[in-house]
Image (cartoon, rainbow, N blue to C red; front, side):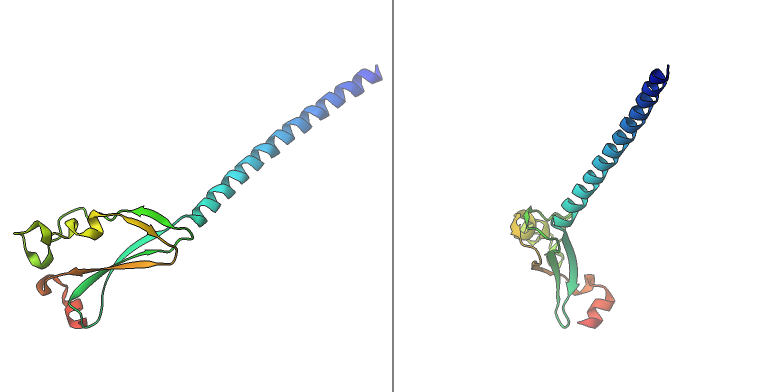
Length: 134
């Protein structure tokens, strides 16, 4: 009779161990998945585009930079609406959306590098604060 009780206790203890081992395995899988996501996020390219004005210049520049840790390939810049240089509506070549920077992709942008694009603007379209800085 004692052997049956001991066997039953051993079965219960083994079931508890199996359950706890299963929970540990699931937690380990979730931890590995989180580490993989974090590793991918830290190694991917991060592209930023920021406009700026140089002092005493009548041009607006666009800086496209890769602040990530890997190369960005086939980067495309797009504009959601027409941006006409000098306000000229008579020629499609004056539309910034059709310029090379926005029509052609950047094949590769290495980590820590940037490209500058000069964008001409009319003085009356520039904000007053930017005109005073120039």
